[in-house]
Length: 107
Image 1 (cartoon, helix red, strand yellow):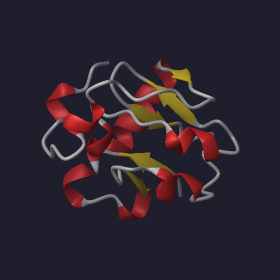
Image 2 (tube, helix red, strand yellow):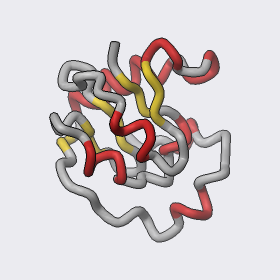
Image 3 (tube, helix red, strand yellow):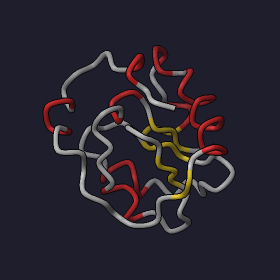
């Protein structure tokens, strides 16, 4: 089982999760992060660190977010690894409570 970044991360891109990842499995896109399922070791450390609760175990991804399992796998192959924490976008706090952001994903 791997962990999956879901819709809550879009336009927020907080990187608290990156600090605790022992294997550098996070990949950074223009406006969100994803987890490389081939690198993730299922340690669970990132889940508690995410301020917008965007990270789930693959088996626990909400039904309406299941497509993010494949999206993480796909985008993790195209995006570069992120190995250290970065500041969130300046407007991240404005987006953190917005629910429907899927259409805003920049690939």
